[in-house]
Image (tube, rainbow, N blue to C red; front, top):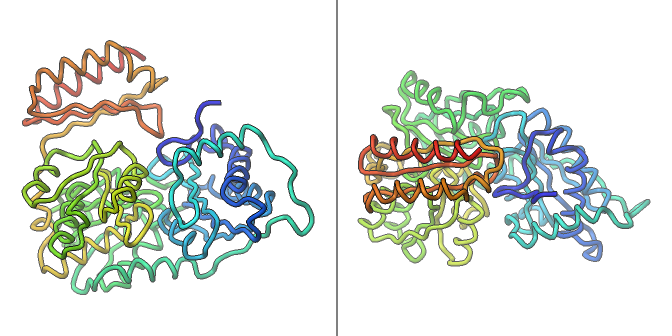
Length: 443
C-alpha cells in the first residue's frame, strides 16, 4: 500500500480509491492514535461538504469512530475551518472533515485534525497509516461503543467566531461564489451578519455540482456577476471554503498573493505582524517578495501546502501566512486556512480605509507567471527523470536570474506542475511549454 496521506489528507475517487471500508479503517485508526481508550470519555467532530459521496463516507467515518468507543458529534455541511474551530471549541479529541476541497465532484477526501483543531504532522499521519495496515484490535462492546449526536449550534458558533474577528462592512456590496459547496449557507450569512449587502451565486448545492465551473478555480462567473451588479468586489471560495480569491470592482482578479499583501500591510501598520514577517510558499509570485521588501517585511518561504505554512507559522510564532491559491492563515483566529474569515478581513480593510480593493492591492505587481499542469501516470518518477531535470536546467540558464522555474508533483493528484516566472509573458510561456513537453515525453 502506498502512502495514504497527501499534502492535505487522504483523497481519491469516492467509492474507488476512497472507499467506505477505507473511511472506516482510517477513522478507527485515527481514534486509536488521537483518542486512546485510557483517556476516558472521547469525542470527535465530524463535518463534510455537500458531495453526494460525503453521506456514504460520513456513515463510514462515524462507524469507525464509534467502533473504537469514541462519540461522534455531527456538525453537518460546514467549511473545513469550521470543523477545525469546533474541534477546539467543543474540546474534542479529534475532528474529521470529509471533503476533496477544490477537486471535482467524483473525488472526495478525509482530513483529520488533532486536539485543538490542529492539522497532523507527518509522524502522526505515519502512525495512523501503520494502524490502518495493522487492522483493528479488540473493540469495545456494550456500553463501551461510541454514541452519535448532532450539534445543532455548530453553524452559529462558527459564524459568531468569524464575524467577531472583523469590523463592520456596512456600505459594501459583495458577490460571493460559493462553489455549490460548504460555503453555500455559511458565507452569505457571515458577510450579511457583518453588514455587507450580499449577492450569492452558485449557492444551491445538489451533491453533484460542487466546483462545477464555479468557485475559486473558475472565476469568470464571479467576474461577470460583479460587473453586472456593480458590486464593490467579489469573493470566490472552493468546495470546502478554506480558500478565498477575489476580484475587484472592475473584474480584475486579486489572488492569494495580493490578498496577503493587503492583510500584511494592514497588520504591519497596526503593529500586529509578528517579527514583521509573512510566511508564503514557493509558488508565491516574485511580485509579492518585492512588495514586502519595499514595505520592510520579511518573507519566509515554505513548500507548497497550507500544512507547511502552518508549521512555519507555529515554529516562528508568526501571525500571517498563506498561499497564492487563496489559503490564508491567521493563527490569532484559527488553526487552518479560512476563506470566509479571509473575506471578512479583506472587506474590513476596505471599509476602514474607505479604499477600493484595486487601490489596496496595487502594491502587489505580479511578474508574468505561467502554470501548466501535466497529467502523468507516476508523478514522482516523471518529476525526477534526468531528461526533465535537464530541460529545467536549460530553461533556468536562459532566464539567467531574471525569473525562476518550479517543477513539483501535485500533493493530491497524478499531476506534475510546471511554473515559470519571467520578466515578460512570452518568455515565461515558451519556457513553461518546453519543460511541460519534456514532462509529457516521460509518461
